[in-house]
Image 1 (cartoon, rainbow, N blue to C red):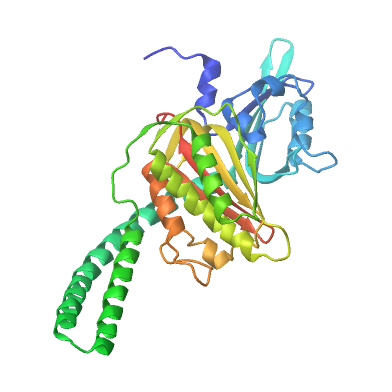
Image 2 (cartoon, rainbow, N blue to C red):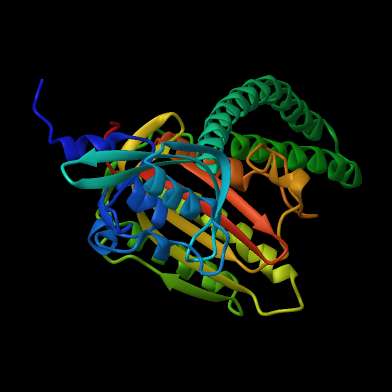
Length: 356
């Protein structure tokens, strides 16, 4: 078994690990803690631990630290609400362990965010849900296509026997409607070819999608918040274009319906370290957010948003997002959605490296 530096072993933990000196300044963190505080190790080192939390906020962990330091006592808290410096509130379990060295006392803090574990469980459910719905859709499509083909053939034969032009209009209607249903069934099945991966630049994909959406919705404002350091990834470029186009079009249609404020969408890219997608943990994961200022999505729709035929639009088919999810799951990723009456965010996670 290869030797691994003790400091690097902590990077493989799901928990955030922070070591503090006696003056409660940070002297060591693992990669998960960097993600938790959304700050690099370089910035965190020698920083007062209290500065990571919102000022004038009653964070139980700060008083627990002082108690542990004073009485050399281990402390564990469950479901504590911590308010970070960016005002984000997180529900987490945490433990504080005093570590006594020669003439020195350090504190080791272990943070385990509960909301992240709930999100991981939801991702697993979404992947299982998407797989089951795809199998159901394929089964239904197969059962429906055969009789549709028979109906179309019978309508064509009947049309050949009819001399009255007015009656032929009825057979034309039958043939057109059968063709429409065939197209709908094909849409339910999603991409009908295998994923062909190659090295691609995700920013090129998003810029292509942005230009298409901008042409379709010229009054829409589309902002970009890209991380220029994002590396290339192995993916099917055309399928990713289709997936992000479906998501962006859904957002554009949503903000287009809101007449009370100007429609705005933001494309944002980031890199997450030591991130779990489904039930697999990856060293680096690409995060692509498509954020709109539309009226939000109703809770009853949000719960089943990626199932076929689920939509809150009067003229929607409810197929765009399930197809997008199918494509992303095929790339070992996942699409998540958070929504409130002021903003909706579709987050796509795509692994950049092999599973740990």
